[in-house]
Figure 1 (cartoon, one colour):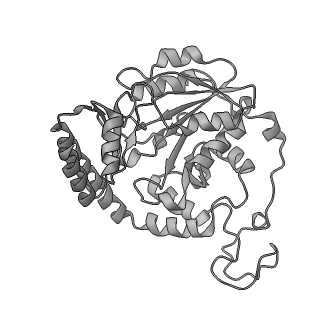
Figure 2 (cartoon, rainbow, N blue to C red):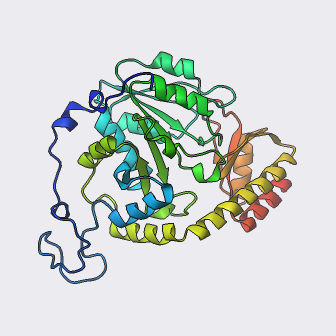
Figure 3 (cartoon, rainbow, N blue to C red):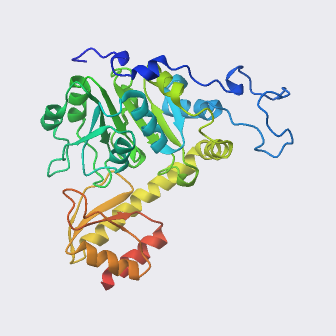
Length: 348
């Protein structure tokens, strides 16, 4: 890296001094199969969920670590990516003092979490091509800038950022660069996971909500250096990922072939939907997508959104976002859903 990075220079003083809560299940290491549990004041009658879950989700982490080729020590699981992102704010950003940088149009929770944590959110618009404006970003950085959030592939634009732009930020910035890879499974670009050892100030977040089809169980994943993960573990709630979520995630992650088959079908359907949208007179532009959705510029987004809603089809009107005037975001559905959408669009 161009600049020497030391995690101790950016972690909050209160977090450094914090003595973390120690749950009953933190005091030993065992799968529990032969133990009599009389330590956590639980109801002793077995029903499948009467015991507290593994606070460190060891079985699930072991499986994910194998699939992603990442050490378990480089991993934190959360109650959705939103909890992971919130923990990052709480660990590294001093309220009413520090700031972060976000790159709109992008995922709205970065800004919301900044407000919740009383952290200044400095926005740097993407370029007209939806790329990161690196000089403008670095110009916004000061000594109190702790985080830069990069959603790649980006929501709502669908594109992945140029690798050289992200590398420049990782090499020049004294704080943490958080790359949100919620849609990485739909992209031909490589994940930044393989660069964790190269960049100690890199955090990568992923989710089981998109490609894995588990939005309902809320399971987010954070990958970072052991030092960063240790800090986040220090402040996370003791049993933040419940037992049912862990069980369902294990079942789905084990079924890797089924997940990949669904991703392939979604990509095929994305291509079909792009072609159909191109043939509609009121669609003015279709933006390239590395995600499971398509952003399209139309003649009148408010009108078209309402027309679709009246036909019982819900899409997302993104016209309120910077650089996204008169745009609709179409999530790729099943073949049946996409055929119905296309038929309705042709009637408008």
